[in-house]
Length: 264
Image (cartoon, rainbow, N blue to C red; front, side, top):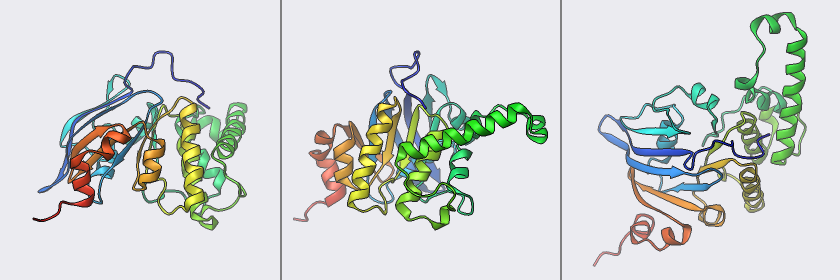
C-alpha cells in the first residue's frame, strides 16, 4: 500500500489546461482548467449533462480531447491509452460499475494489480517459483485492500451476488490495488444510503491519509461540502467556478446553475 507521496512528487500532481471534447456539434467539455495537489481532495460538480464524466474520460485516456492538455506528474499524457495512464499512477472508478460480475470478489481486486505484476509468459505457463510468489503476493495484496475499504462479505462470493454498496467498495479496492498517486471517483455515493455515505466519507479520508490525491464527481452536496478541500463547478461543458466549498456555495453563477434565476 502507498503510505506517503513519492519523494519527488511535484507541487501539482495533475494540471488540466483548456480541456475540450466535442461530439459533432455538442461541446461536452469546453475549456476546463484546474489543478490537483498531492493528497488534495477535489470535487467536480454540476447539473446532469454538465460534462463531468466526459472530462474524467479525457483525463484517463478513454476519450481523446478535441483541445487542451493533461499533465500528470510533469508528463503530458494527453490522449494516452488508459492502460498507460494507469501504469503512471492514475486510477479510477466508473459511474456505472465495471466489475467482472461472474468473477469472485478477490479475483476482481487482483485484476487491479495487473500492471504491477512482473512475471513473464514463461513464468505463467510453467508455474515457476517467481509466478507462485507473485500469485501469493497478489492474493495477500487484494485481501489487504478489501480489508482497507471495509468490505465485510466473503472474498469468494461472485460480485453479482453482492449488494450495491458492497460492489462499490470492491470497485474502490480494485482501483487502489493499482497503487495510484491519484484516484478519480465517478459518483461513488450514487445508490448509497445515509450510513453508507458516511462510511464512504471516512474511506475517502483514509485514502487521503495514504498520500493519495482524490478527484471525485458527486451529486450529494452534503458529502461534497463535508470532504472537499476545493470544488470545481461545471455547467454545459464549461467551468463556472473553482474554490473552497464555502466560496463555491456562495457563488452567484453556481446558484444560478443549480437553482435558476427568477423571471421578472
